[in-house]
Length: 243
Image (tube, rainbow, N blue to C red; front, side, top):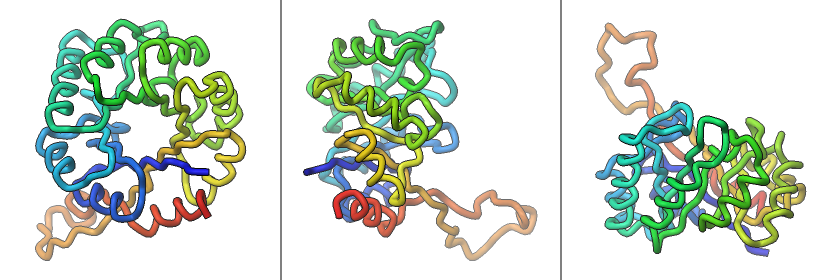
């Protein structure tokens, strides 16, 4: 049984670590405190040049909700085009209407624009009004997978709903659990949900290597650390899933 594991990268260093540690795919993001936004052109380009495993940048112009203005949607379209030009394998999107239903029309535009790249519908799905109506719409649009925590903050809390979605999808689209997926719970999640793809962050803080630290910032965390991904955490996750 072959599982697929996707890991989030927030830095070029993390992209390299993720590939070298044996993960299958990278979701590339910026701004972890906002839940992930679109990385810069420079980072996407560097990541594509550095790694050979599938690379999926998130297309999200800001943090917060998933109700976007016309200007924001225009930015998303430009970013999808850039990802395709740079040779990315896919993109990750998610758009809702104000009533909590899927923005079918604009999501379909992004899927068409992204072709032949794959498109993952991200955890905007967890904020939608009716997940089973949304499932059918996202399949119809042509997305390849849905990232979900089962409409709960953590995938472990939404495992029952994820299992229902896997059954309802019936192989027509990939249901990929994410949020709080760790080495200690991924094996049980696989059993509970029947999912074959998993998404994890596993990010940690690395201490700054700066030798000089301005005294005005002593006692604060400004400039003291940055986000990274540890190879040992990825390897532990893969071992817990695949044995």
